[in-house]
Structures are given as structure tokens and as C-alpha cells.
Length: 440
Image (cartoon, rainbow, N blue to C red):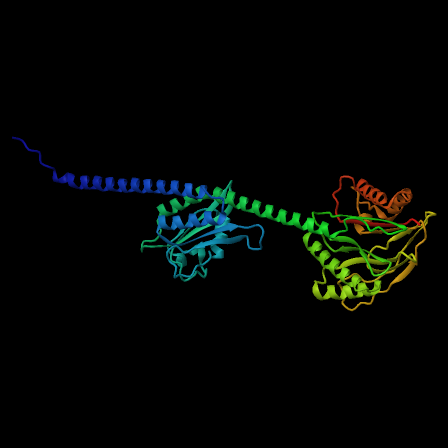
């Protein structure tokens, strides 16, 4: 009877094959685990549009898969002085540890080379000689978040939870995670920006409505006078305003202001100015006292970079006298029945620059047929495509050509002429206009 005996010389070969088979099994097992992990991660982050939630999920699950202590996602920001802005830190299970942001030199290296980086001895690496590493940093893997060859961020995990440190397999898995996550993060970031823009647009829309509601709904009905006004902001909200304020007795305050700048800041200052002027007017202040007090209050409550040009007049519609004061505003024009014109040229410093300013006032008697035009510089400084301004001469021509028409039509004709002059050029400044016509 024959029996086969193992050749002792084959034992090392068999052991090597067994070891190789075990290693292959480990590799396959790791591959299956990684594939399962990546699929689970893809489902988890694909189900959300919340940027913070997505990044927290990526960090938390990656720390578990890599058995690392801490993780950070740093996104590239073009809206701050710091081109790499850290948005998320996650400390994993190491709650007692102090979180730390990525070293700036590390981020700079990643910004330059855009390739994975594994450091199991950061302080001994020649590429980062002289870097003052956080004392808690022992090891790290850092990978770029790339979208269409553009760096969108950096994903870093720190401190492998064993003495051997991170491996090439860890770096490879981190690279796959980054490749899988970068577009998801970018999409969520864009969605987040879109939502912020939508909320901002809603706020601007509400501000525009509030500002519109602050303007006179209808012109005042004053015997012997035809009055009209309008304001067209260059943006959704603006810094121009006009107002008609009934005073004690037979008087009406007429005012028009132009706050420096445009948009929400200018509109907020305009609302502040309107409240101040109304308060002074209802307190029965004279034209010069109204401007003097308003200027003092504005200087005490606003930045001196935000000044206001302002024209304020009180019309006595019994004796037909117009008493007015001017704080650096364009002088209004009076066009008489014989088509001659003259400016109401009473000058003073703009509001909000110097606190202690005494304004002067002047009085003019209005005659039947006189037409008063009060306007902002957005009218006369409106430019066409050749950079030529509309100017006072064109303004006066339009008024004289439409002198016989009602005040609201004169307003419409002026606005139409300004827009026609500008052509396709965008409106660069707020357009505000008041017309007062003495009819009898």
C-alpha cells in the first residue's frame, strides 16, 4: 500500500501561498468594507442639501472608517481675505480634546500642489520645516476637494488611533472619499448661496415696499396749487425721498433729499431723515431751524461718511410766500408764466458732516403761473452712452415745452425725457422730482 508523504521542502512554499491567500482575503474584505462604506456615505450625503449637515456626515463617518481622532473640512472662499476658510471641525469621540484648525502652511501646500498628503511624522518632514504644529497633531492625511480641476476645499483627518499611523490604504480611501464628496459639497454650497440670495431678495423686496409706503401716496390738495412728485430708485431701494407735510395753519412743508449712496444703507438713512424732518416740522420749526436741528441729530446718530443733500421749503398758501433753506442740494428752478426761469439759490452745508451749523433761509413770493421744480441730481446727471449729462438746460427745456400741462404730466414728461436721453445706459442714480404749480 502506497502512502504519499509531503515533501518537507514544499512547506515554505505552502506557507507563503497561505499567507498570500490570507492577505488577499484581507484585501478583498477591506475592499468590500470600503465599497459598503462608500455606498452608505454616498446615500447619506446625497439625501441632504444642507452644507453643514453634509460636511459633518462626511467627517463623522470618515473618522469611524479610518479610526482617526479628528477631522476638518476647509472650503476655499473667494469672499474673504482668507482664501481658505474653515467651516467645519469634528472631534469624533475625543470630546475632551481641543479642536484645531489646519496649519496655514499645510493649506498653502495643498493649494499649490493639489495632491494627497500623508504625514506620520509632521515635525520631521523636510517640506514643513519650521512649522509650528499644534501639539496635539501626531499624524494626518490631507486630500484636495476638486471639482472640474478646480480646488474647492481640503479634507484633513488627524491622529490614527494606533501606533503605526496612517497607511497608503488610508490615503487612497481618503482620496476616493474626496472625489465622491467634492461635487456634493459644491452643489450644497451653491444651493446654500442660492437660498441666502433668495432670502436677501425677499428682504430687499420688503424694504422696497416699506420705502414706497413712506412716500406720499397722493399729492396734497391745496387751493390754488397743482402739486405732483415721484421717486424712482436706481436699485430696488434708494436713498432719495420727497415729502409733503401739513403744518400748523395755512402752511405746507415740501422737501426733497438725496442720501449719499444707493441701496439698503441709503434707504435706512433716508427713513431716519424722514422721521427727523417730520418731527421738526410738526414741532412748528422754521425752515432754517428744521435743517439746523435735523443736521445736529443726524451728526449725533450717523457716520459722517453718510451725508445728505436736502431742500426744505414751507409754502404759505394764503399769502403765497415760499420760505426755504438748502443743505447742499441742487437749487430748484422757478419758471414763470413768461417762460423766464430763476434758481432758488440759498446754499448751506450738506447734512451730517459738521454738527454745529447754522442754516439760513430765504423767502420768495409766488405769482400765478409760477412753476417750481425741485429735483435730485439723478435727473441732471443722467448720462447717455457718450457720457453726456442730461443737464439743467434740457430740464428747463422740457418744463417750458410742457408748461401748460398739469403738474403730474410735467413730472411724467421730465422722467420720460431723462430715460430717453440715457437710452440703453442703465440708471445710475435715483431719480426724484417734485413740481409745484401756482394756478391762481
